[in-house]
Image (cartoon, rainbow, N blue to C red; front, side, top):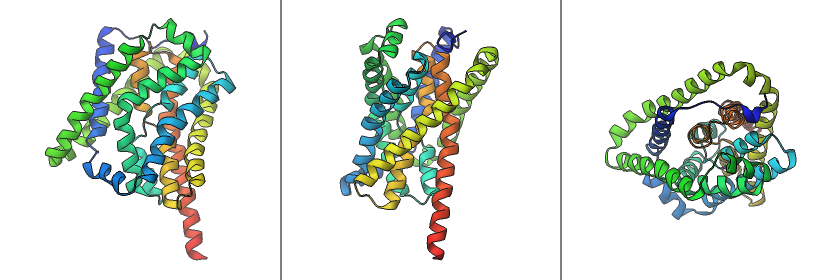
Length: 302
């Protein structure tokens, strides 16, 4: 069986549950957002705006170029485009802190890109997938109706995010208590779902790991390079460069996975890309942060 033919079957109840989990993911993200994060953009806008541009504009474009160059299986290419269209993940803030980057900048870009994702994620997916002939054909095959997809995605991302931000603003103590259960619970559900689907389709999926892992590693290296390259060209200082490098290189692949399962016929190739990202970007981010810390220690001693 070809990887494009592997589908993680979902009935209507499964799709409803996944829609709820997607809403919970965004609600959990919003619990981390503060008005002060956005006020920082007004005080020093250059670095946050640059980070958002790299995240929302350059990475999706670079991802499309990579799919055109490598020409992977259509469902795999679609998964890469979906992940590339997602905002930064919350783990980027922790990894930035570990790597002695500008954590405040990382938090600011995560928050802003998450808010923009309400529209930028579905628009980027449709635009860039539509420019790749293979993924465009796949979108027609699974009958994605653009306006309906944009509106439904905006609603399921935007309304929970608004609710989470309002709760964080008006009831910060309650938001602090809810943050971990919401973020952990939604993540664990996705992990369990993928694990169950992988077991059910194990004889097919295991054979594709040799295709998926190198592509995820290459795509992640491209994302990190986009963040680093843009920062260096713009002349940002080292802490800001590290923050934007990690921010662009660590996507909210859990969101991407939920979108794939809920809107894109749970295509196995796309789901494997998103699931692989969820593991690999932690490894690459932690490794990069460790290298930076080691470099700083050597510089301190010299």
